[in-house]
Image 1 (spheres, rainbow, N blue to C red):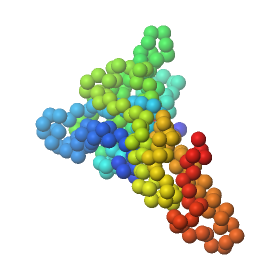
Image 2: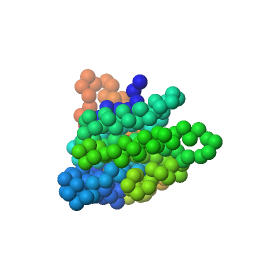
Image 3: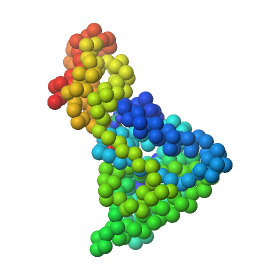
Image 4: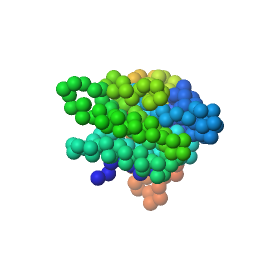
Length: 269
Ligand code: ATP
């Protein structure tokens, strides 16, 4: 049974992430500094096993940010989907949580990224089945409290539903850094389009495309929506290239003067 991904150093960089400047700054301070200057933090008594909880609507960059943190620090990221740790047999979910931390220690330094975290730590309510998840929460907190500075394991969690999280996990010294990852605003979308089109150099862009204008047409788009729009535009442009060169034996040269390289955003609304 595959419960989580393989730990690897991801190739996502800060440059791949549009907008979210304030969040990036906070992540640098709250997690990258403790990773880079772990000895200094230890000497000054500031090494704490606290985790970072990112929350907000889906598709707005939480996973990307976790990858960029690990990339920037040059350390492994161990991605874990919360629901995949759940097991109906008593004690098995707790064992799975302990195994995750053990795996992370084995490949330390390592960032564990728990996605859909609310599935593991729902608020405790009498009479609901979340009672059985209490022990999962306790196991998780015990594992985090058990960190020693030599463990070099860091934890980032993400959720769309912070309101259903057990408050025990957000107490000081646990997941006490909460970062809200919002839907991008106009400038955020421009920045995502720039990141996604390699600063406007992608051949799917015609020379007359104005990314600010495109962004104005994309109110309320999430980062994932912006990504999908560029993907669809690229596919459209590729199809036009293939069609226009169907009678040729060699593919048409890629150059911006060709009318086929259109950014076809508007067609997709
Ligand atoms: P979920 O809550 O559903 O897990 P998420 O917040 O973790 O979503 P991501 O997986 O990080 O969202 O983003 C999904 C995709 O959307 C990314 O792979 C990327 O292509 C695009 N995307 C989202 N936000 C951004 C951003 N700020 N900059 C560039 N691309 C983005």
